[in-house]
Image (cartoon, helix red, strand yellow):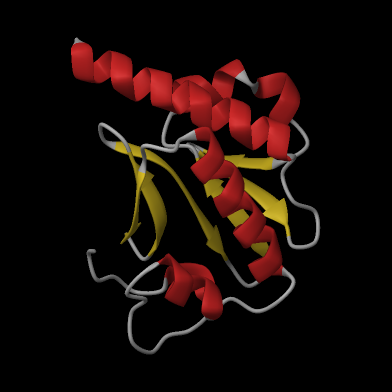
Length: 132
């Protein structure tokens, strides 16, 4: 796995070697939220490879799929697709959006059903791109 800084985990020492190490550096309650998000992502994209990239947990399947991170005042879900986020505009309007990322408050996780839909849609996007 690629070495990278721990990003938003708040720990500025040695870079996380894997997602378990990244999550261990995240304080509660964000850690529990991200552990649940990890399970949802793995369930929705069982063929995806989990890595640390750009200092955060990232899932790859025919390219970057999705990622997540904990920051001091929020958590983030990296969707990596502006087109896909636009397609879910009605469902994500209550969250702060930055280009290809959703920011959500610590203690108020994204709904598992929404994460599942987005991850499955990203898998389809990446698979279609790999074929064409």
